[in-house]
Length: 121
Image (cartoon, rainbow, N blue to C red; front, side, top):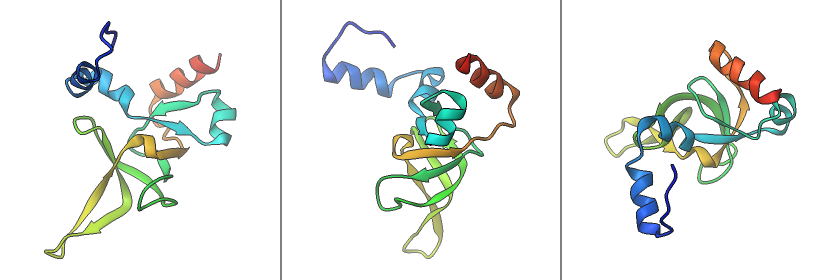
């Protein structure tokens, strides 16, 4: 999104009111060293099925598969990252994608494979 304003309030407004096709870019996370060398890319948008490692916060060091990606809240949900509520039920904990590192890519989608090859060339 291109703006001429440098006001923080205007930047926040644009961030929170961004359309869905731009929010996908906000869901980018860095790749591990091995993947970075293999594909020649530093960051990629996180997708369902990717294997990630949490780098910061209470769950730092935990690895797991991404089970859900929430574009509206700009958060991802990982399989074995849950919290117990006072009622006894368990809920998945939302994690911001900048706090994770992708250690395994889900390459089921042919368009993702093509885009990686394009970026490498």
